[in-house]
Image (cartoon, rainbow, N blue to C red; front, side, top):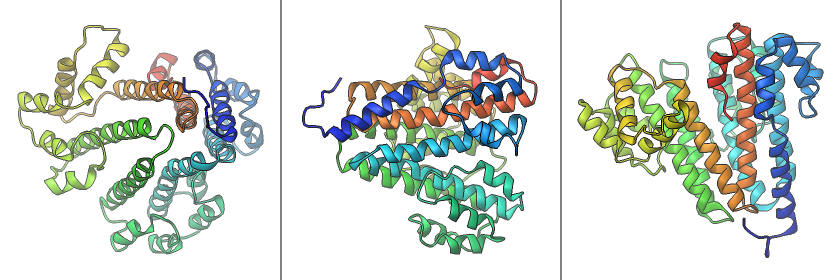
Length: 374
């Protein structure tokens, strides 16, 4: 554990608060109890939790699984906004950059909803106003009827130059995926530049972010390969996010590999295979599962144009979060305790949404549990 030394009292206070808030998140035992409850039981259980008062505030307007989802989303936004009141100095700056990813998610949800004329209240319930685009601006965007109007209302947004590039094609087939990819490319570039400027724990955070980019690129590559149309090299390049540890050329070569020998040979040169192997070892309780086994598993799914099994993706996410938390304990007065809390809170809400949806479809607990990130 790092010692405070010359670290400011405000930094020590903030990091301590984030560690305390981390301990108040739902525990494994909480999830096991919730899994055995009916939807009304889950609503009652969460309503009794100190941190989920949104349940009681919304119970007159929503019910069932929908109530859980909407309340969880609003709880996430409130938690993120509260985190910004705790953070000071570089913690505050970095928290703002981290939370900017929710601006992208909100904008894309509104653009898609506007184009396909989805119910506005349904879209609003999915938004998490945690970035620089506040609730009033998001509500204004929801009141607009075309992409052009939405783009124009976003001229003051820091990522507007990306939207401006696609102004004429909004709504065309494939346009939203291209816009979203470009927004995340700009987002990660800005975050990596900020981290590279130097801060306590930034070197470790940089390693974590580059790994996150690698995992995102691999998932994007598999998504492209599962598509009905064969993509050319420029499509792959537009989809890959620069800044990871794995060069984009490696992903190009993977995409165009035609034999198992070539594909697995390339994959084994990356950090993906050992991470996947570790995830599967934990998932299947198979201590002998190797990187070669992991590469073979991905090839089997790849060759059949299938997405990787969801349980494995979740297992990788669990490993990623544990690594972040381990770093946060090692650098206890850096930016990492804050990021560890924010990421865990993000997945707590994702867990509750998965449980609500699963129970709405009468899935048994054993079918829902693989979707839970702990």
